[in-house]
Amino acid sequence: MPNWLDVNPRSGVPLYVQLVQQITHAMEIGILQTGEQLPTVRQLASELTIAPNTIVKAYDELAHLGLIESRQGVGTIVTANLNGALRPHQLETIFERLDALVRDAANLGVSEQELRARFEAALARFYRGVQGREGEGDTHDGATRATVDRQQFSRKE
Amino acid sequence: MSDMSAAQESVGNSRQPAAIELRNLVVKYGERPAVNGLNLTVPTGTIFGFLGPNGAGKTTTIKTMLGLRQPQAGNVRVLGYDAVAESMEVRARVGYVSEVNSLYDFLTIPQLSAFCRSASRQWNQGIVDRYVGVFGLPTKIKVGRFSKGMQSQLALSLALGSNPDLLILDEPTAGLDPLARHEFLNKLVAEIAAEGKTVFFSSHILSEVEAVADWVAIIRDGALVVCDELDHLKQTQKTLKLTYANLPPAAEVQALRDLPGVMSVAQEGRSVRLLTHGDVEALSQTIQARPYALRGVEIVDLDLEDLFLEYMKGGDNGR
Image 1 (cartoon, each protein chain N blue to C red):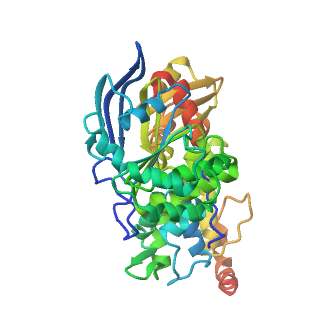
Image 2 (spheres, rainbow over the protein chains, first blue to last red; image 1 turned 180 degrees about the vertical axis):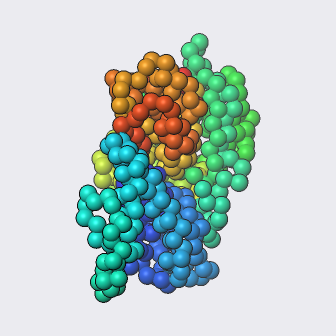
Image 3 (cartoon, helix red, strand yellow; image 1 turned 180 degrees about the horizontal axis):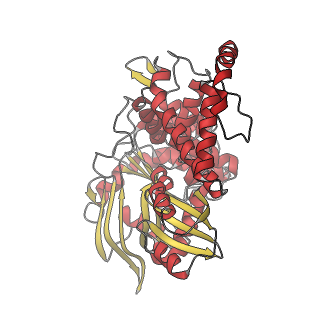
């Protein structure tokens, strides 16, 4: 039985959300692979001593996200298009982090102008390989170094 | 959240008629109302945790559901039957495990089974034997020599003998040690609820309700405080912790109190705690758009104990 599942009923996070998160995470890191079978509702209820309805709800949600499928006579299995299905969810998380970042920076007294410059610098570092050091807001002189650094970046991949 | 239904084993769904339906129930002991205008709906197929402080009216409510007490007013329907006019129908279809184990001490399990069978219309000894086996209960010695845990397990096994669609348990794990409690709850969840039966149990042990129940109701002074899906309750009830850059004026704190979704407000200097209901993210955005600078905004999840305590001290702040 899945020893990577570790739900905490005492948490303020709903149990079915914990299940969805942990099963999704197991897929992301490859513990659960495409085509693999999930425990039945009854097995998991017994294993975790939680209400069967809670597990049904988690499986419904995972099916809704396109991550698992229930097949007659086979059980619940992990479906193929893991990356595609997770993408909207991952994007949502990323953009939430962006909002949080802006808010935290503002709370620390970072001005809009400085934050924008930093963001531009970060974009430039990634996409054009500009090596702006931490604390350097200005990115305009970086263009000439771009080609070299881009090659370095590709090698790293 | 999800409207898709994966084809799992049948574990009940909310579209079926309610297993238990109480409307404006009033039950009095003399002049004193133990249950005072209680409304409650228990969806079919759920594991329903029934909570409340001592003296809130839990046991009286349960006895009324079984037709063991006459209500002074209101309606009680159990599995579609009127618990007053059709109490025999109700008792024939409901498994009941009471708070005080009143098994006959001088009988063995087979003798006790025979006795229960004689009182039941649709006894299934196979089910009883199966659970007696699952719990590993001895069949040759008298029940009086059983430990408290074994007696609870036996009471549950016998309650299942009439193959009921609804199990009502009054403090079923009271007096059990943690291991026996876990084993009892595990069978309740894995064997009984997984078959689609409705399990209604009262308890004052919040952690066990939090673990096995998917629905909860909290009553106080004989009336309903809250009734909701536990996951939904946790998802919608949050604490919002605000830290202001400067001491917020009293008018602003009052304005927070009046925002939709704010149930209560507690202020200590620059720090303000809100108990919220509904979309906490949206509420947080609304508050951040107000003209008072915030140093920090934190959304805090609440566990069942937090929620219970909030409801108990909340007075009129509950929904």
